[in-house]
Length: 558
Image (cartoon, rainbow, N blue to C red; front, side, top):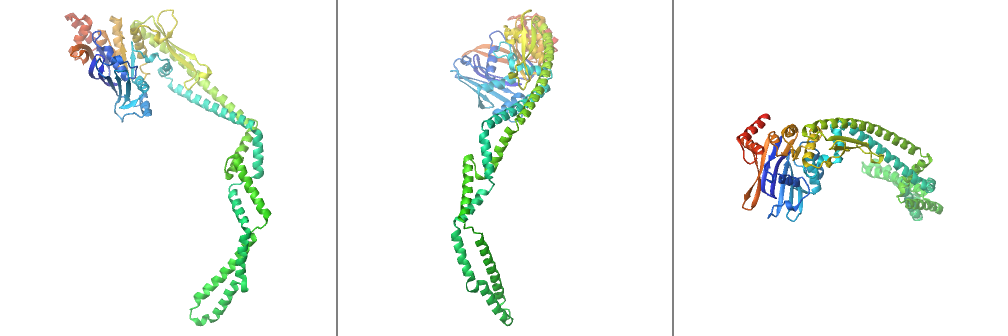
């Protein structure tokens, strides 16, 4: 709900700070006092079109700030989160607009600069204005379907239809992707078969490149390695061999060890280890020598395979170790061709089933929408008669959409239409030419949709235009009932409507040093009676008018 409105230098308003409460609030005052200026100022804060003419004469800029209490779960909450301008928990949402005398404007939400378009989107979720206001929210056909679903209790049905639609579109995407891959594969089938055969013939293995490179390096240096090992073998075996020398020394010392009182034990152990190690070294050297391949043909074969693997990797634009994966991937693509399109046929069948499921759910939703539309037409029609719009007819039109327009909300387009004269064809809501008639029509529609529409603050301008007596009383009664669920503001000239208010503001203007200035004051109970008496009698308030005002206020329970 709207908590406060701060206005600086807007037309006749120099400085104005207003606080508001829930319930029905009326704004009264003589014609030309500035009631419409309040709407113009609020429209600025809500992101509507800015006109430099709104800046008070002589001022550099106009500033309007509107403060709102937004309940948890309200649509504005998610929008503020997405924009990164959400207030701290429990804090109000503050919309601010500045308008320079040269026509430039800036928009802010919670003191963060935003686009005017975003400010307008937020404003549309917080305040709805009916009457001679340029942007009539309920006339926008884009919201009619959601309003009908909410009125008919069809939101769960609509969500199921949305889920079925998304399932269908996923099936369509999977089938189209498979078809694209199959078509692409068939175009390059010859290449695929050649590539797979080539990879199969070479049969690359992970880690093979590194092993071959090591083997090649070894074979390239084989002669030097063998020569070095031969020299080592000669050294180990010369003069009977190193091991035999250790064994000879060991036998010699063993013969005298008993008389050495343990002083040779360490030497004997070291000689024993040296003999064993030299024997093992000789054996390992012989084994390594036998494994060295000096055959030039073997080197040639190793190089050929290594170079073939690397050439194939370059051809496919990958590392050698990935060639096995490339082979598997190409084989899968070939299998998609060889299976005769069975996968594609299966996906086509799944797509058809998903479409059928969506269509069935959407058609059932469409049927229920038509039933709900009939109920909505009857409910709105019942509200039109007492508002002196009995000749008008409200019609909810539910049209089937072509398949290319189907979506998450089903297969229907929903339009709220009106026929203002008997026998005339129904047309868009905004065809109603009179601002007062439009406001009363919107009042009737809003009363019926009260439980279904989340906009918390409503403003009615000229809702009582050209009506009086019982009709004005009916308007007041419906506004009061609406105010039990919403915060409702009414700009009115009707004493019957004003008497229904929980809060009463009077707009007036007076001469100041800088010219005419408009002001707004909250009326106390006795001041309300005087204002309602003025509305009844005109400039000269009579005792009869005061008595009539008392009667109106008493009739509302005050």
